[in-house]
Amino acid sequence: MEQPVTGKAEAEGAIPEAIRGEAYDWVARLIAGQVGPDDLKALKAWLGQSSVHAQAYREARRVWDALGPVASASMSRRSNEEAVGHPGFPLGLHSSSRRLGRRAFLGGALAASAAYLIVRPPMDLWPSYTELSADYRTGTGEQRQISVAQNVSLDLNTQTSVAIRSQTPQSLQLELISGEAFISTGLTPTHVKVFAGEGSITSDEANFNLRRKDASVSICCLTGALKVGWQNMSETLVAGQQVSYNDVGMGPVVAAGAEAATAWKQGLLIFDATPVSQVVEEVNRYRGGRILLMNDDIGRRQLSARLRITEVDKVVNQIVHIFGAKATTLPGGIVILS
View 1: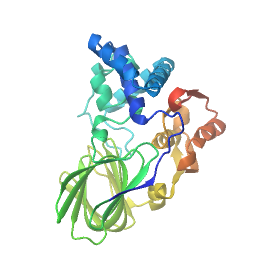
View 2: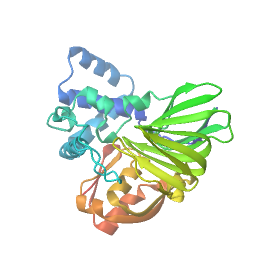
View 3: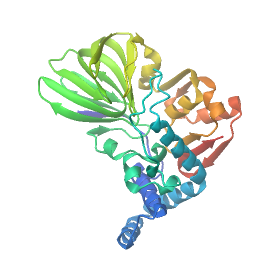
View 4: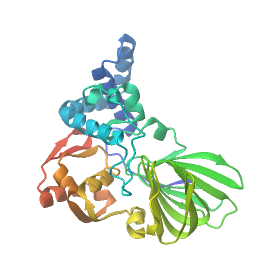
């Protein structure tokens, strides 16, 4: 049975996430020139649904008008990174097998095709179609506990999507589409297998934290034992161990940083000499809008901090005061750090 644990309460007058995403999609399609007479009629009807729809459209338009060059630079950088693999992956592994053509970026942030925006939202401003089609999903700032089988439970962190592939009394197969989950298999007759990215995790009795960001997956075993498979490779993890993999390989088994990995369950984020760029990326998972770090020098600096999830915006002030960044605030929760 699904049990909400914590939720992000919407303030009076706040724009629901779904409507905000639709507004950004409409603005993107308009500026991309991918609308005809019927589309304009549909947009007019969409705007007429409520004052909230109109407000969301005005806000999205203001954000994109102000963001223009910044969004273009961010998306171009993302395109270049995907063209050479995942250079930021800690294993030091590289790949040239997956390339994303520049046709996906037609000259500017809002000239991207509507199809691309649905599959890969720019700067992750709203969930992708795959995430929205999951069986279980948490929104920004939301956490949820789910019981999926006898003695099998999932604690879902913010922006997490999970799908059930198959389920019988003897077997349960799940897929972590994106995000982070704490999975407890307990002492159960059900054999549990979780797919994530290019690999899988199997367990009959274990508690483990599983995190996926695009192709990068990390597994931290807290109790019991589990098996991690990637193509023809496999590793067994026991309590106090962790391992990571991406689409080109699996790293070594190392001692687990269990406190930091599961701090989110206690409402905390812990950073220990973490590059500012990674801190910003993590904080973005818990807040509406987006913090855009446009200063690479500051991004490479290291920050140690303990933040309550309910107060993650404090990191902006820390980056400004400690590293001398300049913060520019835009509608929709957009903050540019330069």
